[in-house]
Image (cartoon, rainbow, N blue to C red; front, side, top):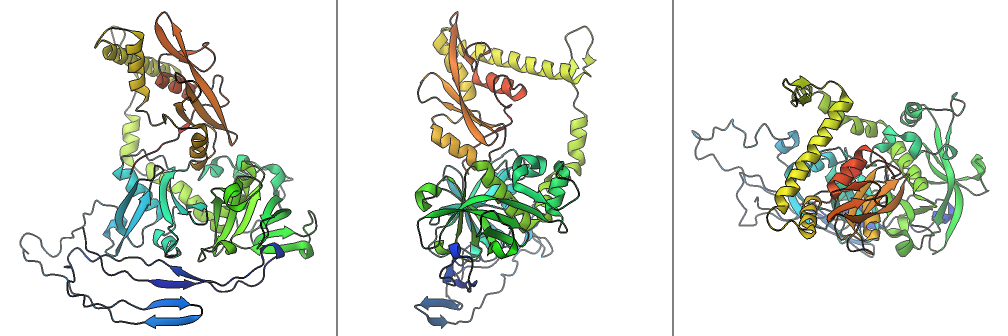
Length: 533
């Protein structure tokens, strides 16, 4: 492990932003002290045991009095190579096969948390992006890269968090943190991160969107997204939101309008006349966060709170606190703000992984070389019908599972208890099974990983110790379905529809509903995953 130099403290100050609308007016311009980043010594530099360096300038603010200390920083040169014949100077210590950002000599140490609050400290280049961090942990933890892994910024003392966009510099994000803020980075899935590019009409309800174009109000998916991405168009989001008045605990409902120029509210009903619209904020130097506990921390009327925070401020009085009546409304506002802030950069983030896949010849060759074969007759044949190939694959999987269960139950008396234990051994290791997670925890986990159709998990039932519960998201609402055990002729089955459709184990049940909707409102598409990093 490389030795670390003395830490450097930096001071960040945010200037006055001027007077805003009445509901957000108040004292501004407070000085924010940011936590310094710790540079690491080069691998070829020895530790400086004599401490012949002094700490650079550190700004300290005490009631308006400013004191500073200055010093001169010196560094030792690299140690000469004692074995030039074994390690020529032209050979790099960093392998060429590593990711491009691993060749940067300037490094920092960051700590990243997972959803179970385990953490790992890693040494990374100072110019690393959020996508690079995600790729690093995907490789280290052998995760499936389905482009949904995301880095989150969480600010506990304010009770807010946000998605760090894939292109953002992680070090720039950390540079805005206060010394005692205990801010942290979380690595987890977010299936809804770019879902609005696939199904924009689900994210932007027709009654909330106004577009100045010649489409006569009728737009398809691609036209709607193109309108938000094009700087020449003027899309507008409008509707009622609850806003917290500055310096008060009360919330009031106002009619808000979101445009490229910023966020406004009307001081006269739903009027959009310029003289009635009051400017709230713009997004060039601000970020959009969701409230983790809107009711408990801020006394909001609902749990669907969000806010706009200046990038260099970590003071609660500078937050523009807003609250929607439902999840769909909040998602619409937050998504539109992200699009207005980043524009085409978001779309480039979305398509970048797919472009890499298309450019990989190894992947296309391996996919084209896989064909379905039938060896049941005297001669083998290629199965060309996709439906037949799928049914054969499912049947082979079920046959293999029955043989596995038989082998597990053969080590002892073939009883119902033994069979149930073998079934338990099958599903308990699946990533979608979350054991003794409560109903509230399941809803929180699904919400954190993105409220999109088909996101699910399976957990133990709290009311019936022999049953299980399938928690599923549909139309941004989370529904719970009990999986009931059914016994027949000494055999144990599981069912979602009172025994009409039976399955020998939970794995078979989940795979069936991944292909068929059945009694569910949606097929099972994405599972909630928790990993320990």
